[in-house]
Image: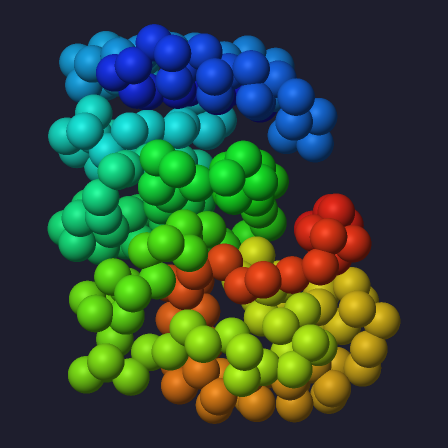
Length: 208
C-alpha cells in the first residue's frame, strides 16, 4: 500500500510516517509527504496513492481524493467537509488529538465503514440528527450488541458478523434490529456514528 500524508507541519508528517511504519497489518510499502494544497494535487496525480491521510486545511477539492480511500484530520469539524467526505466514501474523520488506534482502524477497515473521532459525537448529533434523534449513548446496548455494532461500523455484512462471532445469522439480525431501535438510527446511519467501544480481542481480529 502506498500512503500519502498531507499536512502543513513537518513534525506531524514525520510522526505519522513513523506510526504507519509500526502498523504491520497496514502493509505500507511507501509513504509520500506534501505540505501544501498545490503539492497535494500534484502528488495525487504522480504518486498515485492507495490511501491519503490529509489535514483538512489542505483539502480544497475533496473529489480529487481517491474514492473510499482517504482519512481527514482536523482540529475542528466542518459540516461541508464532513458531508463531502460522506459522499466520497471517506474512511475516517479524526481530530488532531485522536489516539493512534483510530487511525489504524481507518486504514485497515473493511467495506464501507467510517471511523469518526468520538470527540465529534456531540457535533454529529447536532448537525446530522433527525431533529436531534440520533443517539450515541452506547451504554444502552448489551455487550453482544456492542460487538455487532462495532463490526457493522467496520463494514461487515450480517453473514460476516455471524461468522466472526460464531453465531447464527438470525441471531445477528435480532441484535441488529435491537441496537438500531435503541440508538434510534437507520442502518445506513451507523457509519456516521463515533466508533463504538469494543474489546481488544475483537479489535485484534482481522476483517472478514
